[in-house]
Amino acid sequence: IKRTGRNGVRRFDATLDQALERTAFLTREFQSALSKEQLSIVYQPIYHLKTGELSKVEALARWTHPKFGEISPTIFIPIAEASGQIVPVGRWVLLQACLQGQQWGEDLGWEGTVTVNVSPVQFAHTDFTEQVKEALRLSGLPAHKLELELTEGVIMQNPTLVQTALHSLRRLGVEITVDDFGTGYSSLAYLRDLPIGCIKIDRSFIDDLASPRRAPQYAVALITAIVSIARTLDLQVVAEGVETQEQMEAVRGFGCDFAQGYFFARPLDAQHLAGLLKRVQPL
Ligand code: C2E
Ligand code: CA
Ligand code: CA
Ligand code: CA
Figure: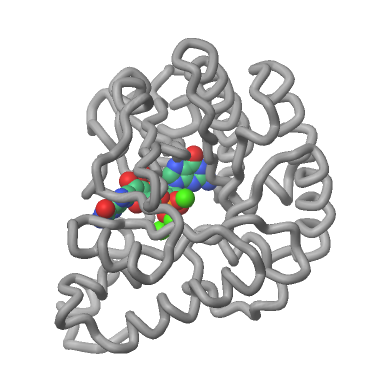
């Protein structure tokens, strides 16, 4: 605690108390969010940068509280992880996304992939592979149309457990993506040792490309290096958080295979996303 006089210290404690109280409150509220049907899923398209095809769709959880409105997943996911609620919630998101992907396949002939974020807690507290098998069985979605997004943190937290799980998931035909690539301070060995098919370059690197002509050299160098590693290891590359035409053209120029971001579309509800599925993006 930085002492800035008696009032300063007291103010700091009050803020901390407030934060802890807010977390405790949200933790209680989130316990019943699923059963009270306050959770929903939005879907954000991921486009192939050569063909303009909508190749993948990322499922993102949403919590609409009756009193406080939309609460960001950056707030409720950590809360759900701490309380263990992420286990039933993650299972629910996975099943909903598979059902939705299967329906888009049946109704619209969409051949793309649905991607689902996986929390480290889901690996630690459940037989995650069984959960995936169950979601595929209940939805009828072919395994190759499901992709799981794991952060480097998930992989590093429990390498042995994750390695076993990833190999059995891969045997099922499910694709594995490393999310937020480049932010995890981890070694690159896991890219070679694990059955990973795709990496997502973190949005912070794309942000640094705000204006390609003035792009900081290091952002260009890093993205180029990441793409080169991916090529060597035969991995697909997604650029996330692409917000402008300039960024889209830059990441395409660097050789990224796919891109996702507000430039193309915000995350949308299933109905609105369906409207985009058959359309090819003019790039
Ligand atoms: P993420 O997996 O890295 O997801 C990408 C986030 O970036 C999403 O935020 C998305 O709405 C946002 N985004 C996409 N394009 C742009 C862009 O062009 N500009 C900017 N500024 N943002 C963009 P969202 O939906 O708020 O989710 C935040 C994080 O919460 C996710 O980051 C993910 O880590 C976590 N999350 C969301 N849903 C789930 C879930 O079902 N399970 C788990 N375990 N985590 C989830
Ligand atoms: Ca993700
Ligand atoms: Ca990400
Ligand atoms: Ca991110």
